Length: 321
Figure 1 (cartoon, rainbow, N blue to C red):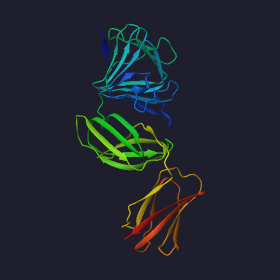
Figure 2: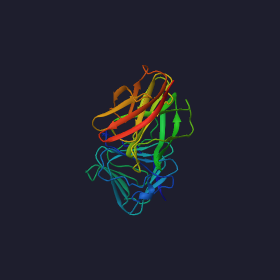
Figure 3: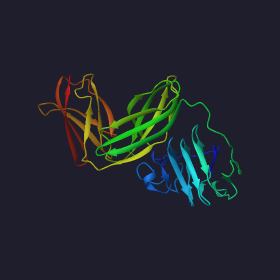
Figure 4: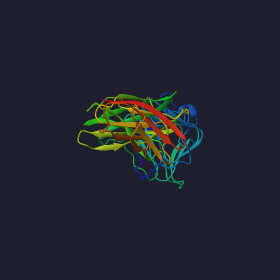
């Protein structure tokens, strides 16, 4: 009979900017099976500060083998160790958070979670008992937002983002942020929260003009009192698309607009604004894939924006009211 325990290994962890999040699918499965994970990528054994999320209702199983991982394991569903000697071998400083409703189960007295390189520093899962330098407890502290999962999926030339919360308290909105390198993030949307909720809430957003190739998304929660929490990012890869940029709002009505490219800005780039007669009205620097400009000096009319980066030349028509 499987024994169930709730575990919180309270250890420090140094997350790096290169950390990645791996979320189990609703169907779950064997840890080492790519089909178990959103995006079809198994959490690497040699990562540094990576995050594994097992959502509520999902079961991830380690059967008759040792799985090595270095980072944080957030269990909202079930992490199951089955068969002889099934082991989760965690690097030094790793954390397993078992949230309310989540569980870790085992079927054999030698199943265990090892911590670091010390073979005696492990969490034994037999008979619901524990040995090793760990504290048994369930995550029970009040969190403004308890995030269950956050997924990003490429669908053609768009990216579909979905996430869910288990609870919300005094919560205002999510800021959805995007990055080309996993380090420098820019807000692309705000999604209102429920304020206060003790039941699961599901959210979704479609990025209709994503970066071409690899990009990163993350959520930042903002409470009514200004408290902010940043969650781990997820990575997604969009099939290579022709270089392009968008202008918004178009028409321009308040003397300001922004541009957004589907590629990284590398080296010198400029945005030149021509009037209907072909005369140059403004030449502006482009320093990032998303940038805002003040064009309050332009008269009402139709203009051509020409973005130049190296040999790449792109044009858009914009109306100014």
